[in-house]
Amino acid sequence: MKNSQLYKGSLNTIIMKLLEENGKMYGYEITQKVKVITQGELNITEGALYPALHKLEAEGLLDVEIEKVDNRLRKYYKLTEIGTKETVNRMTELEDFIRNMQTLVNPKLEF
Amino acid sequence: MKLTTEQIEYVSIYIQSFDIKFYELQVELTDHFVLIMEEIWNEDPEFTFHQVKYRAEQSFGRNYFKEIEVERAKVLRKEYKRIQLKMVAEYFKFPKIVMSILMVIVVYRISFYFENLQKYVAMLFGFLFVFSLPMLYLWIKYRTIDGKRFLAIDYSSAYLGLLIFPQLGINTSNIFKNEIQQNHLLVFPFIFLWALGVLFCITGLHLYRKNVNNVKKQYQLT
View 1 (cartoon, rainbow over the protein chains, first blue to last red):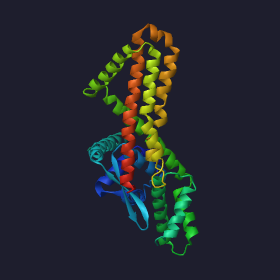
View 2: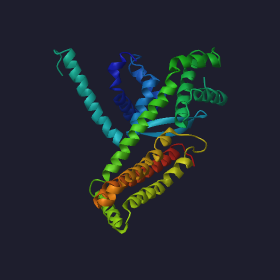
View 3: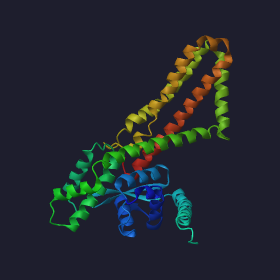
């Protein structure tokens, strides 16, 4: 992940936003989706992705579905009802953060 | 290029060789690793299976396997504690607090029928130990489901933690044996500790059963 420290705090929100848009997703799919959207700029490592997914699952924000695909089991994640509501809150927080950062680094820009 | 069933089995054993004991992680990491391998193989179909595996290993990073398991264990332990404490705290709020107060009052009133108060306290904690036995039964029963171990179940087993209450109650009441006998009100802290143990037992049992049912439902196990 480029400048991983900058993205670290937003990883959970990124995952939740992706799940909100795509319904259910599995780990590898999330890494690929992020890579495609950011045109390879952002690469989520497995060591960061799975702890984040497991934390969100333990907090009750994500639910798990197991399906058999190509002779193996696949673990899908999807937002719970609470998770969907929380995504809206976290996205607002993230947008505010981005706006504040933008103002700080480039005070002349107005929104 | 898709991996065959035998190759997937090989990958699964390879993942387990990193001391990944829990089934939910074996499933998740195997699928992820297989997908990386398939992607590499699609890019260069000339590679052999072991070349692809080697490249996938470099992409994934060998250290991540165990790290993911350790992190999951930490997250589950922390979350389990948080949820259980929240559930216990509910018994100190209306309306459940009425039940808690009633339980303490009834147990306190019964203490007047006993001449040896230390023995009464020891008996209470003995009952608590017996009351926690269903937890031990479930812990043994669901240590594996269909021969598979699940981290989500392993870390929601509070049985060993529950043993602290009987031990603490019996030992402390022994130390303050004479004081309890001289001052009846001193039974109260022990009853409170006992009630707390009962609450941890009830909530622990509830959480454990919930987690077992959840895992069974997710993985379609019996």
